[in-house]
Length: 230
Image 1 (cartoon, one colour):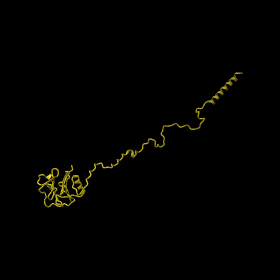
Image 2 (image 1 turned 90 degrees about the horizontal axis):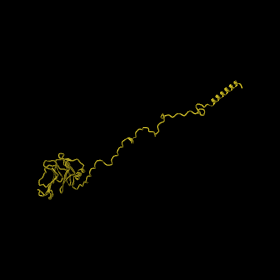
Image 3 (image 1 turned 135 degrees about the vertical axis):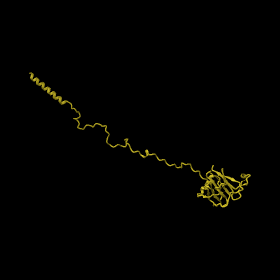
């Protein structure tokens, strides 16, 4: 064999090896030859544009039940202390306490008559404003009360007057009455704005009160009583 054919053979072998190498070299993208789908988008951190659901912490307007102060329910009973119950009024029984006397005045519910002195249908005489005496006097006789009168000028209580202390029954033998006093009918309240004394005239007698000192008295033909609120 000559040298030229050998060289030709070697060159042919070299060319064949190069061609074979080009056919078996892997492609740069192994998936490009097997799929035609578009590449999966990369996840992003950008917020979605969908509306927030009710489960998301979205600020909402405060509701009335959450922010408004509840209005307290009104108390079923008054908050002020209850007014003491007035005793029942017996028109035929004389009052023996200040509360009972005041209840008789309240039961009348009428405007008082302004007077300085007066006389009743039965002749009892009352002075509501005087430097001498403020009180009421029976027309005659008096109420026997020897235990109270003792050695007084009389054994009968004929007058009850307001003084520096509590109302005072007097076993009198004199009189405070003067002629010309106006007559006040039964079931009438007489008063003097100068002294504040009020007198209720009834068929059973006269009840007089001094509201400023919460004291008073009752004077009837056969009975008398003095009382204070304390």
